[in-house]
Image (cartoon, rainbow, N blue to C red; front, top):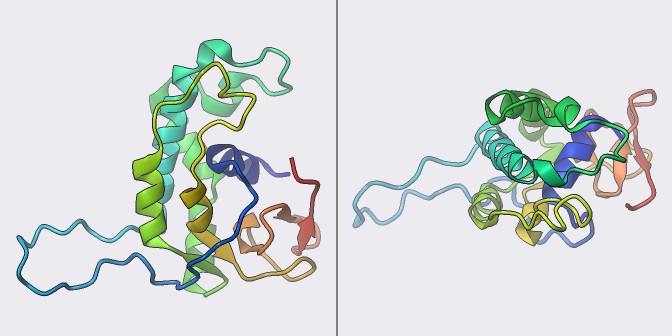
Length: 182
C-alpha cells in the first residue's frame, strides 16, 4: 500500500461501506433564491478539502503523539514531521492532490463537495487511548467524498481511481489491484 493511500485511509478509516451519491457535482452550492444574505461559503474543491483534511489529521496526530506506538516500523517524525506546521504540507503532498484533481477533472473520480464539507465538519478531537489502534480519525461520510470508476484490473493513476476501497493503484502495472482489507 503506498504512503498516500495509507495516510488517506488512516485519516478516513472504515474503508468498508457503500457510496451513495456518485454525482460529480454533488455538494456544490446552488445559486439559491436570492433571498439570503449572500454569504454562502465558497464551493468545496479537491485542493481545499485535502488541505483541510491534512490540517485536521496533523492536529489529531500531534494531539496523540505521546501515545504513538514505538513498535511501528515508521517513526512518528517520518510520517508527520516535527511540528504541525511542517506536518500539513507533507501530509497533503502524500495525498497527491494534483493527480486526484486531474482525475476528478477527467471524470475518473467523482468528488462530492457536500460530503467533503460534512466530513470535515464532523471530524472532532481524537480519543488518544485508541487513536493509533482503531483507525485514527473516522467518519462514515468521509468515505463518500471520492468514488473511483476503475474496477480491479482497470487502468488507474491514483488509488482513489479504484472503485474498491480495498484496492490500490499498482505503481508497476498502473491498474487497480485488490489488497487484503486491513
